[in-house]
Length: 87
Image 1 (tube, rainbow, N blue to C red):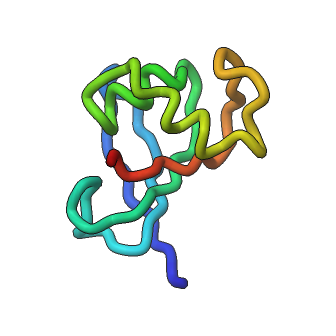
Image 2 (image 1 turned 90 degrees about the vertical axis):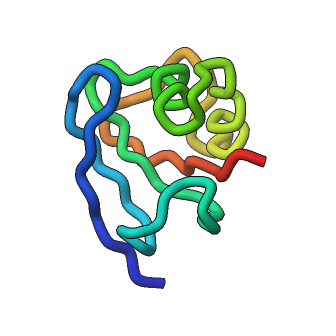
């Protein structure tokens, strides 16, 4: 699978990197999941609020990344997290 990189902005106007297989595709439009690289100041809640519009849905991201995240309150800059499509 080929991955491309796309830079967009989140709520606090910090640049983030989204890595996915189609720059024209957005969450909810046929995409199964995206990969997001954690930036300074991120929390699972902030990431969930950006992608899903609801910080409480951070559990979707936590569940998809249990191999990496042991505590949902602790994420590290540079981690590449799976962002599953909202069901």
